[in-house]
Length: 106
Image 1 (cartoon, rainbow, N blue to C red):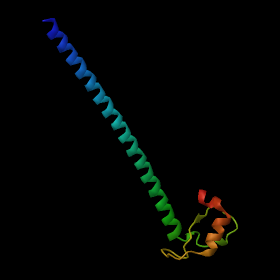
Image 2 (image 1 turned 30 degrees about the horizontal axis):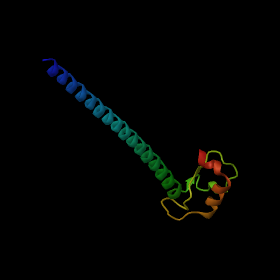
Image 3 (image 1 turned 90 degrees about the vertical axis):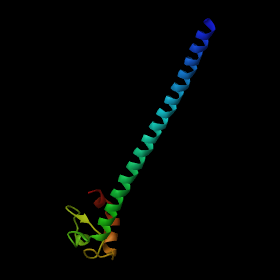
Image 4 (image 1 turned 45 degrees about the vertical axis):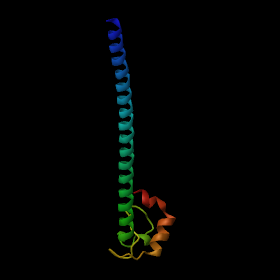
């Protein structure tokens, strides 16, 4: 009678150890998956902001339209296009933006 009880207790103990290991491994996998998803989401938002900023910079002439000729850099929104929705970039605007990179921080 004692041998059957001992075998039963050992079986339960072994199965509980296996169950705890399985739960631990699955918990680690879930944490890794959550972190990967978080990194992908951050990368997606960063790429979207970068893409939108680049599109605005390239596709608009800026405000005011002749901002590259103005001496002061206050209240200027830079844009590199010659005219609205033109894919042609102004060399003067590129040079002004290169000379005053603080315009990009606005």
